[in-house]
Length: 529
Image (tube, rainbow, N blue to C red):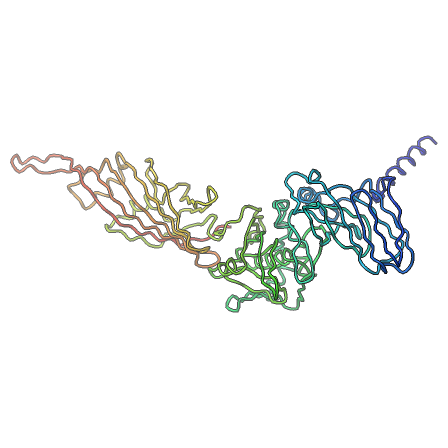
């Protein structure tokens, strides 16, 4: 019997723990709203003004403090809950507001705050009023008065209400206010790629059946028989995945970015999703705020995918979009065609050029003819090229793991600093150079280089100075051309056999020679997954 009593006690305790945590703190105030006068109510930091005629009959109400309010992270998975908790936090108490009758007119709610209550890393500009409806917290459009240290908003019905700080903001579109893209915030920097679903069955079917079409000449993307609609939401919740959007195409910028990002990746296009700010000009107003968008490389050109009006999704050349929309990118992320994640990182406008490429040497032009056996030892036929960004700005390339475009035969190469001309998102030019000293050539190269020069027995002590220009240009979605041009100057010691005319004896002598060489090497580059 004692065991069953204990079991029942545990079950009751667990049941109470699982109940909604909306218990009030035991202190509060009561009031009555009348049709003739309305009511002005103040309790601790919250004030509510009910206008006359807000109710039809005298309506009693109360305000109290919620001891354990619902969390801000309802509806998110564990990783997202942990992430969102860093960008959304309560400020001050949560109040439970009751009113006995439906409101005919919204009530004005004013909540005061103290700067001491704002967590580190946030500002007063990040303050919003929020209320809890249908199991989720929703942001409410309002006004922050930093001089009075209050936030004012209007509510048509009441439930738990509080202030929160939320990194990001509200964007006005006409008369609708929506929460800015959570994908643009640092909290989602490690999870944003999860919402791209290029391998989902419905995404694959849309691409393979031709339901999804890409029309770069008409600057348009389309998905047949899908009625896409913009849908504002103030609820703090995760974005929708690309596959979810294809089945239910209603959402916001981050949702449409996930949809078209997934479709374009599945169709084989290099894609990055970008989080940042954009500015749109609407009749009578300019709208600026947090935004998520798609950038895609099509036929060697980079486009911005404009989903502001989802009824007509357009392609805008990236330079035009950066200028007209005042794009301010912050982070970028994506996936490869085979579904490998490209995790969030600081945005780089030259992302189509970055990464690893496999080269195939297609031509070599030089002032002097060099046998292939020697040339291939110095300039490989199929090297690997990788372009990266260092120091936040400088472009750096490696060639088969080296910082130069040739094999140095084991000798040390002293490089001069490179400078970069960044022409566009589809092309770049890198200037560099250096010098090296080769004490003696390998025997096989000595043999090859003196073929046809009977008097030359050995070439040693080679000093080389060179200046080079490396140009990279995107050709299409998977290939590029890389052209290396080099001006080379140097000296070497040539050991020769010379017949002494006075004695008739053949003698070996060393002569110093100088040389110049101009070389152009062209590669076809294929993007590595």
